[in-house]
Image (tube, rainbow, N blue to C red; front, side, top):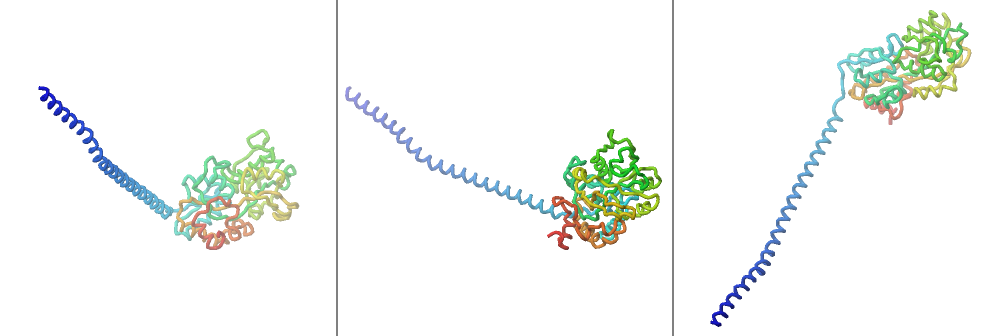
Length: 379
């Protein structure tokens, strides 16, 4: 009986040991077999990650290539060639309007696009271009740059503007009747009947700045006279008829109407105070101080006249076709003499410096720039 119990115990112990050995040895074996499996799985994961990364990289390259192709296509896309061109100028009958009409004739011949002059104003013309209501306009260089930056009277940058060519310089004139002894300086205009031009004209903006620098505010108590908004021809006629005491404007000294008025009824140029001219230049950028020598206007001008001058330039929209602007710019340069009748050869800057008065930070249209590189104006 004891022997049977011992055998039974031995068998039980063997089974137990076998069971324990199966758990210990059998557990180690699966652990060793799982390591290669985990390594293989990790490899598959890395491979998948690598493929995903490669695919992502390819997608990024394709996207970058597509963007580059798009940018290249846009840069090579042809600019606008309008069905017709309007050259926005000044008030009808004024000197700018006449210049604009001649420019329209030059544009039509050079570009093959039907062209005509349109009335406008120096201060308003940048808005016309920015808003897409026109493609070319006469602009005073300093005012154009002011508009481009969104400074002065312009509340937003006019980034659609490009400069094309500077044309001529004109003096700012204050004119009174020679027989009127009560007007001998700008300070004397505080209680007079005046015409400074029309609102929207750069000449009007300059006139306001000139009077303001001399202590005369048209909208304040310092001015007790009357200001009539008239075009060039109208205000010169009213001064001739003694219906105005004085007029102002950007006008050439050899203007035919002024020269006629020099004889009858007799007119005189009024000097600007040199001490305040800097204030005017701050208010209206691009103006330059000049001296009109004695006798330069007429034989009755006995003294030098201190005043300011502004340069008239042609501006355009930047989206215009490069070839169109190139041909127009070249034609203006080569036919400069056809414009002298409107402002005098001595005032022209086309041949001497076609970018006169245009700030170096003001963009030049690529078509005009190409022409200037051809003739050596731009290196």
